[in-house]
Length: 287
Image 1: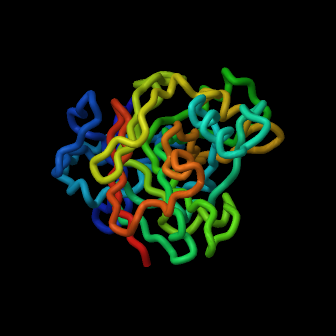
Image 2 (image 1 turned 45 degrees about the horizontal axis):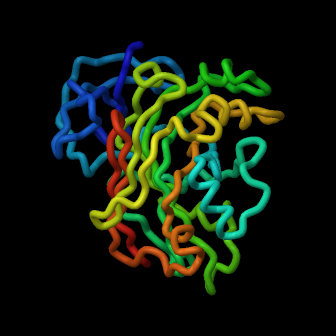
């Protein structure tokens, strides 16, 4: 294992990976981060340490993934989320296999970026804290769960920002309404899968304006990370560097309010935290 905790930021005019110096076990980051510049890309297994150490402003971090071909989403993948979805009228749950859909890679935003919310998305904006996985050392298709687990490169944190049904949007359109540019924050760190294991069992929390609104453990996923990746590859070639959202737990505002919520308002601070990985922190900015 050549690297353990990678961040990404602009260095000398180019997006660059760097290894955290003395990463904290709980995933916390200081406002000023010490890191060693590396060359290469973890997807290509060619990370090399340069010996150059720099100090980075936390607010300048980029998504910790480069050249992402597509973003894959997993729905209804925690037991309590399945229960609350059933209570608002979803049928045939739990799903017999992972429920998957896609977003364009242009939707990704940095771990501390503003969430720019288009007017059509503002009726009922919701949060979904999720574990992120980066997958694919090479293209793969129709693999076993064990083989799929070996394609998991690392873990990060994400907020699957979700416009719910409303007068402007109409019924929820999972691909289009979630796929707007720089709408989906991930980060702040990519943690090597060998550090946390496959599958990991780690605590997660989503916090809105200081209030904990989601709390669970990844061990309560309906389908673990390797099972999700194997399902993605069924009949489909998964490309190297694919970013995967693995599903949210219960506690989303729209589900808690039985579909009657007006969503989080402009200026809301949404934080998603996973133990041993870190926390993203983003303000909803209505355009």
